[in-house]
Length: 329
Image (cartoon, rainbow, N blue to C red):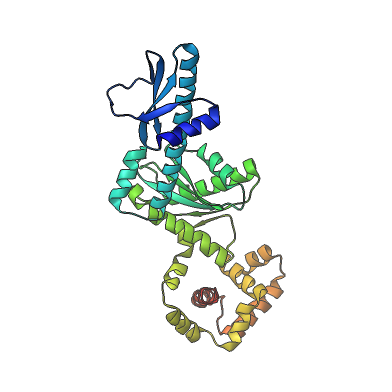
């Protein structure tokens, strides 16, 4: 290792330096002179070393200071990379609660109530991470690059917050807006629930990531989605494919399938459900004549046997549409 370090310094700075692993840990000076040599202490990939340059005096000390700064910058970069990778493991639920606490102690990670965002970033993910890091709460919030198109945000919340659900959704909207205004990129964010401490953050992140996934599968409107939007979807997805197929068969016959294959009809039905079964509001949102909407609702009823103007039938239709999409995907 020492030969490798010396060769690296020779190649980068054209400086002849020898080094050896530090044994005496009582002397913690950054550099010192001994007869005809200048020595300095540095860290490299977790190990502590002593570097030695031939000569003494101001010029040699300046070179020693430069090398100390160089090795410190490498150590800082490595520590930050290590922290990011450990955050990823914590968010993905890898490891035990004990390992989470060790991670928190090593990197001085704050503990407390928090929630996770999962942000789908189509481009400039590194720039997005750098920008979101600027909005951290006193340096406590964490922004983690999960892959080339996804980043996670761990946001701490005040214990006395009255409406954590409302505030977490609003923070998701803030993140989406900030990335649009500052970087010109359209992102979609999933929001997880607020958990009591960091060792439970994997649950919040899983909810946020699932919210994003469901939003894509079900072509959900909007740029921010919460896990609560898709509780019914999650419940149905936990069923076996055989059970889902069984329920779908009970609720739908062959004539109903044409409705779910017709994207225009399906969008009309879903907008009607989102508009609280209000015909006038649905017409306005779809820029559709009222009579055209009523015609489509009648057609859906004839094909499926479900009058989705009635709440009970609307619920059945919603379950059926979820089953259809889950099985299709």
